[in-house]
Image 1 (cartoon, helix red, strand yellow):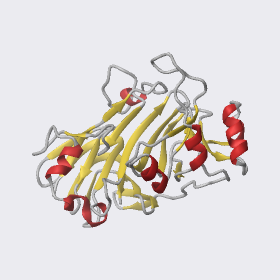
Image 2 (cartoon, rainbow, N blue to C red; image 1 turned 90 degrees about the horizontal axis):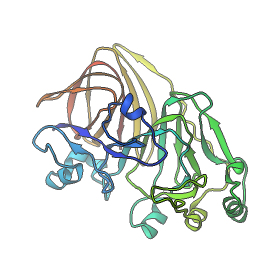
Image 3 (tube, rainbow, N blue to C red; image 1 turned 90 degrees about the vertical axis):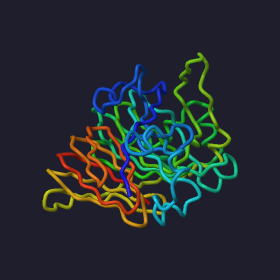
Image 4 (tube, helix red, strand yellow; image 1 turned 120 degrees about the vertical axis):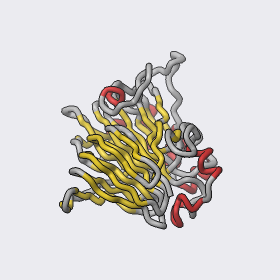
Length: 316
């Protein structure tokens, strides 16, 4: 089985900045709001840069190989199950909410969006909007949106690098300005914009809101899913298991010099470099990497990481 280094799909949404270019080695003539690092989604698939499928999107690659590359759990999903991305919030993102699977499949024709955030960088005073402060009715919620007072009823949480939050579908949320986030989510692009600070898009018009759908799917009671975990020190590396649920499993590694890793028969791995540099070695070739690079590792693959680096590894 094989490892593929990927080229990200880049998104230049108006709230983005320059940090992903300056610090995470993304190349663009425009601002980069999001880098879709491991993506099989039609709105921005990643591209393979090595091996026999070099130049193909992950979508096209998957059409040419057996589903065994996804593992027994990965291939059980109707579509590729996850999407991993970086976000650089130079400005606050819109207040938004995502539907669950049942609603999204019925209304949008794709799966819903449960997600988690790993805070990579945080300027002083930065934070996230995360659910409501106290329980409110749908009528109160709609009135707060229409009166531009929605932020007053939301819970704002100051965050720091290393913080991890789980955002279940239905949670009203937003990434605040000054944050760089690694996001692991279901492979869905269904987002309902609740409030956008009266910003205009490239066409000079206010960006569309999706109030009726947001009212349909939002959970209007307080929620708190900060992921508490600790580093487990091992010989030559440290491990932090972050979260494992029906949608994805995520861990972080700090590698000092060299470590052999493997994906099992149940799942592929999405490997993201959040710090450092080195070389990833499998049976086929040596793949150099730097901060910001990403890899797709087929199920049942043994590989070695040489270098000093921090990794996020996601699977199902």
